[in-house]
Length: 514
Image (cartoon, rainbow, N blue to C red; front, top):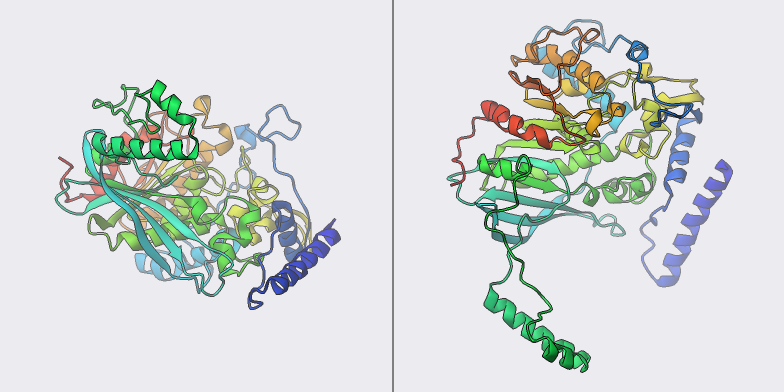
């Protein structure tokens, strides 16, 4: 099978080159390699010398290889890598040693083995405003802008990357406001529509054009004179009927914040087949990744940093008070963004699981092997696949061989406020995510917060015996925070706790929207 894949790869490249020659396009650029996800995965295994991967456990509890949910079997590797010990064995006792020595060591391990390295030369992003208008969100007037970040592709014109974001800020704020950047579809909250008189003109012109195209429509329009091709959108001045909390975006605006929606798929596709495209493919000029190259999580985080570059130029935004948020795979990306870019002031990390706040070394729910042997490998660096290897040129490796773990990823966020959020399995935030393992990681990150003068969870540092607080019990007194709400796979129920918690640390000076 491997031989077939590489013969196919060679054939694809040569055929594409021939096509370029016959169509008269420039031969200065190698064509984009169009692997399937399976082919890309196999190509990386070949580079790493991996002959066989262990299969990941099944999420189906009736399957023979179902995931473990027995807490007594959950910690086969109970000792986590030391967060405050240098590689030379010396203890980290000062913030200066943390910033200059230990933190760079941890970052290097994460970049090389887990998330991949952002290339030294990444093309410039130029931001353009597509739409800017005044809108209403509930009773709150806002300024809403849709922007595109065009990535310079002059060195490889065969690929285009256009980062899509929406920026919404309170229109009546007296100064720059804090904002929360959220991984989501980029969309305006309430696009303005033409007034009734203008809409009548549009409909009259449209009817005339339709009749010219199809004269039989004239009789229909005469039979139904009140019909208009474009109907006005009725707006309920009282908003939707109450059904729990307002949407998170509305809560943010009501508290005097703004928000940014950044579309991950406009940065990098969420699949292995897309690794030769998007920003990863553009930098690699359409060729497959090498083992240390970045994966989708790091690419999405890079995109968030580029959006933050734009926000630093936006006078309506307090760029020193920009937070980052995401749920599930985008919770992982938000944690990565917060860890690697210290300009983000704080983070809300929702239900992030394996590859996020969950400990790799835990045997509970999703495992390292689910990332290395499945369609989710593209989130990580190629080197991460080594830790699911059953047979390879280097032998076999397990999660215990990973030089870092989730507690150190959380620690990279210190001393900035970091809120770890989960729901409950009964409502859809499945046991697969290992809420307990994420709590243990949060506890184990605490010593770094303390070293840097910030407050941790306040429950001590014994991660081996740490037990989650009850559902809806808040640990929100410090910069490191935890709360498991009674909802599902979302962080929305925690927004009413997140916003006042964040305000304690940001102390926003801008006035609330009137």
